[in-house]
Image 1 (tube, rainbow, N blue to C red):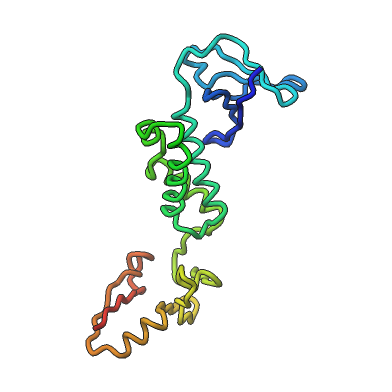
Image 2: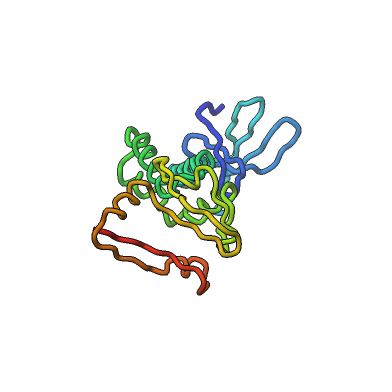
Length: 217
């Protein structure tokens, strides 16, 4: 009878069973019993597990491979990053990733070597695609024109909560002006003013949109 077990979600959202750092995937359900097979069964592993009345029984042959701890660490970290994005989708994804990676490192360093931890944790590139997909469920697809831009509430402020969208006028030929009060005061008192950079043309791929990036001293 196995006592040290837990459940995690696979990258496809399926429930996986973890027993003593080995990973099992669901095979079948018969009445009140759930049958699992080793995730490496296609490579010849014959180890099996049965869940019944919240108890786990290991059956079949012993695993013919090393533990899945690296895979488990990788999967748990990916799930943690996705959960963090779901809980706060407006937070930059890189910040959510860095926070969860640091937390996971701190949690694992007690029992595992730095070599194992570093090799098991997912890189940002490995999970960026799925991370942005998770955030897209909360934040709408980017606008294709200025007319599509509808900025309200937190989207009109800086990350520190200061008002940033100061002018929002028009519809199809909408005029949007972003600045903070402090920047405006600095700009208005400056003796020298430098401007113009067509950043909006790159964003909307149109010749009638202009962005101005200003510098003053």
